[in-house]
Image (cartoon, rainbow, N blue to C red; front, top):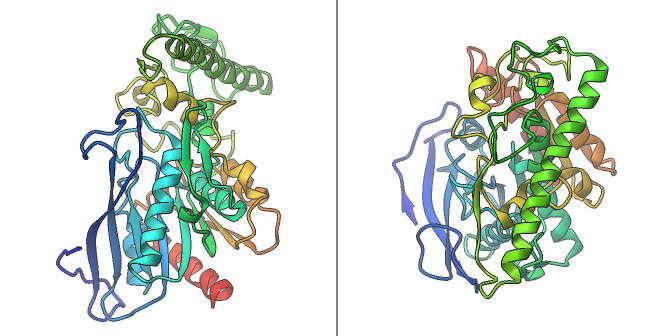
Length: 399
């Protein structure tokens, strides 16, 4: 492990330290789906952030499928409040075009196992931020079931031993959504009927076409039709993916892949009509900026894909990493924190997460006025409220 220079945080004597290290392990794979590494060697980039003079046997563990959140205000804020925090990046940090959710669950298990076995933490709190929320819930459900993983959603053999998936003692759902495939299906542009001609779009379903007779505020009838058309497009792409994958598997090179582009992936009427899933968010804006631009921009969800990744990550019917389905299988205490001005994860997702947990050791807290990343003039205050809520919850349920 290597130490970064300690950084000072208000209220923490001596400040906090950030320790960067790697968790390495090996697995058998037909081909590498990440850049770098050495053959079957997997390396996870980890950041342990903790107060310098406050030891603890409890560790709050973050992982997001695509990663990159080790410098989030929440990570630093929790450390400043006296918590030991680990942000562990999955093997797919920064690139989800080949991401397999079952492999991300493996990565999370390895990071937790390392923290318990090598670093000596005995109590683990899973913290699911944004897209890490469904990962945390799904992982916990698998860990509590003790079944491990035997194959991917596409049916490829992939073994993860239950012994490498330790169960957490509590779960935090922070500014989270219900799943990548569910929220993606709420964002996908249904005006594209032919994937080979993505700029030929049906005006009546194109939110950004001035000629569309359906303008905000949208009618209930339009919303029903629009949502159905979104799911239908997801299923059309999935059908094409399965068809292509079946062709490849029946060929003399069954492990080949196929890469493709998905256009139009940020067309949620919520961004244009604040009466849908109402909250304090600003109309006409999403967490990536202007949704009209993001819809076909380079960083949209699922913009670049591969067959097996689509099935595991984005397929409406096939993807398994789902917080709603997992919630009823979790016995650990769960805290759900939503932000009332969140421009990514709106109230319907927050409420569904809370309702999915069927036991009574759960809590729902909404931070009024807070955005997805706790930005804005009151961001520090909102962050402080969220951190205080987390601290109180953990004190109550873990002692």
